Image (cartoon, rainbow, N blue to C red):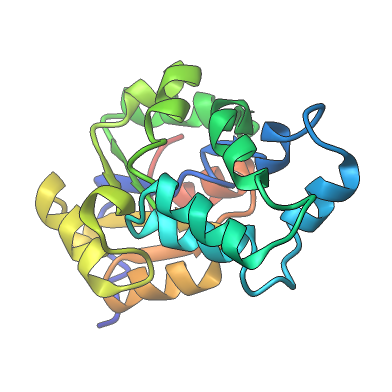
Length: 211
């Protein structure tokens, strides 16, 4: 379903990692394991590596199960690395993405609703909220790990619209992954690939939002 392009914008949905949150998984291991272990742990080419299991955690798989499954696929020195990661996961929150705290403030001041929609583990979602006070400006956040459905499946966008009482045609969504943007567009939401706070402002101004 294509999104309408002429309705005034009342609400903005934001992804977390890479949009609102500067999330750096390597920070959980830095100084605790050698750099070659960090490199191996974060190797995108490993089909049974961090990124595959991160997706499973986002979908609701408990950390203890992930650690056991990861270790079953790996030998030392990678074996045990996922446990180190989970034990220090709060360190992965490096800060807000540049300019996004000010943007949230300006949107709220303009009377525009601001909301979160993130693929994130339910076990760890407190970390960004604890470390980043600006996230308290969000009116609510749909977290994939709690709902056990993930972007870009349609159910999670529809859930966010329903839970927050949003009109898809009056809502804009920003995500750093094109496939998640496409998923939102398929549900009638105006959606854009995130390209920095200033680009978000320009997009919203083009939609008539004064920020």
